[in-house]
Image (tube, rainbow, N blue to C red):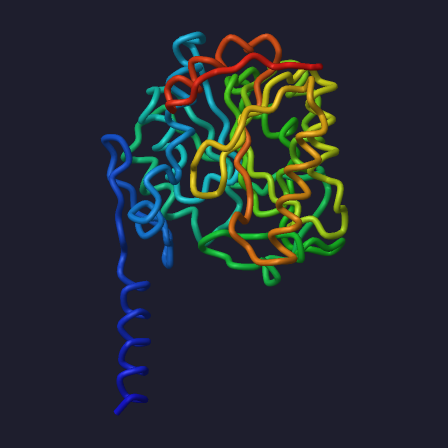
Length: 301
């Protein structure tokens, strides 16, 4: 009897995953990827996946002609979140062919100023074998699919923007690519140095075991590019801290914290970081105020 109940429970969960599920983000009803845990996470963690909509609204007030680039767009849920804070054009970059039909369906609901670039971002000429993509159709990771003789070519952000010039100076960049975020940011220097976007990216050093210092190298690269303020959120969406470039030791401590989690028992898997260029330092206090955080000045001493 216990075994029958177990099989029945498994069958019910399987059927639920096959049935389309939806979520309302802002004023748009979004179809979710099969097997998505988004609704469950949002029921458990009230701040989960909320910050970017607030950030978009704050940035839009300073830049009325704001445009956004969403790398790792998935099914368009992040684009919907951005537009819940600001009704702006968004370039959705997504290479997972299993998600593109759902993304197109959702974009049709979001509005005509949402564009889709069906690409994985990476060095021009690099290829991947789609048969080795991990977790396709949900949170695709291409780290182990890279090969010299692959069936799909990656495109650099610079190359993509040649075809999408309207987004070449987009002031809001989001990247969530299951381990490619550090590479993408460091390979997109021309865009980053020119547009100086507010950057919202996933920080998970465990996804780059081949380069354990990739996270810190990326932070250092951004500080050299003029980024002065980094707002950290944990993977549940809770505000963690505000780190200024004047206190570099904090970045190393946080990187070590994630590594310690992985070794000794995970409480926090990754961070989401919002990075502000020095030219947009004036947006830091409004963001912290909007999420209920009392601001303190950066102290370099």
